[in-house]
Picture 1 (cartoon, rainbow, N blue to C red):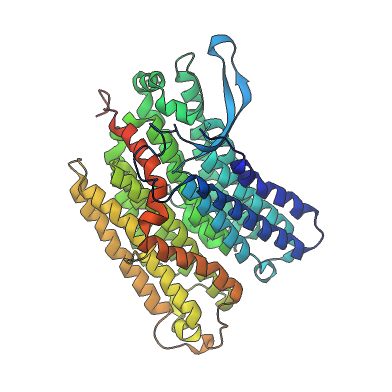
Picture 2 (cartoon, one colour; picture 1 turned 120 degrees about the vertical axis):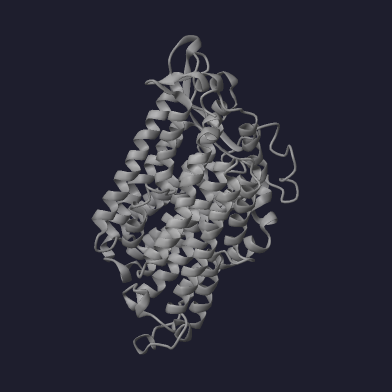
Length: 535
């Protein structure tokens, strides 16, 4: 492990900015501090790249001999001591960086900065007296999200997970649309249920580990043979321990992804949330569920991962097809993009379920690709809503003629979401489909064929939407809509550039960074055979 403090500065710099937002006297200074804080955090996160060599990371052994043996910027301090004598253990402040967390940290700092920049015209879309509270909560939310992706102690992970919940609840419930209270409470209840289940698993992991091996260290739990044997053979309230804990964790994380049938909070939250908060919801919060599965569920409960593969693959197919069909039926522009997120995240779950290197690489690539294209699409919707004050798709038409720069960026963003070859949305879905088709499961090939229909459905609703909104004759009521401003282009252009970069150079921009860690986790899964009764 390589120790360092850079991660600590990245995690807690937004807290410093939040405190400053409470002190400064004017709204303009509040906004300036918030944007500068997110920009500094983004700049600090780019410093993490110094630990990764583009041309070497994909090679075997670059991360050490196994999962968690090579971590960067590690801080490991005893926080709370548990027990006494030989069975004593501790809750640790344990943060670190590997190929799984690096892309998500960079994504978080980038999307948060762009969403903060997108919030600059705060007075235009909400009451100005709330700016101080809005930006303070916005920065606290960034700390919670970054902490989740850096924490390597389960208790610390849980704390940051909960820190994220309250700011998002208030950001939707106070600054959202007409049904903001309903959407915020629904989001809070769903997430809280998942948090309670996660807490049950946290306690069970600790108390069911053999004496002398009790820990909440996520890396140690994944690599300790004694813990793995105990979890594989134990029972919990008459149920096999490993599959029950996997299911409880899955529900907690699936709510965030979101996976059918835990998805219903997402369209309401997106529709009512301010545009910058929708960007964070789609770009980062949904990815926390997938990250939890990759960091906790599969490495610590690999036997249960084999046991659950078929069921998770079915749920993934439902997400892909059902989400696409729901998106096709929408007339609200923002709700269409929200349902498209449900469909796209189904590919992530399918890639994880098959537990092969290609499946996991495709799933992780899709996580990052969707984290780029989806915030871009939500901001594109927000640009139009700021001008037309509605989101009814059928009332638009010919916007490309009225706003050519905006129309060009919109085409790029929605084609990236569609999965056009050469853009970011294509690589992850293609990798997952190829990996599923070649997996050893007897159901893999037909499932891959069904999942491929999602690509067709996605092309259908995206192209139909582009035709209705951006093409065709120009409507008179929108003839004088102003072109996208410099600030709006500054938000959209980096996302468009990344969509192109990931689509053209996937190896150099992402695979080289993440494949070492992902392959180590898949090796853990491959080394474990399902126990009797779990096959």
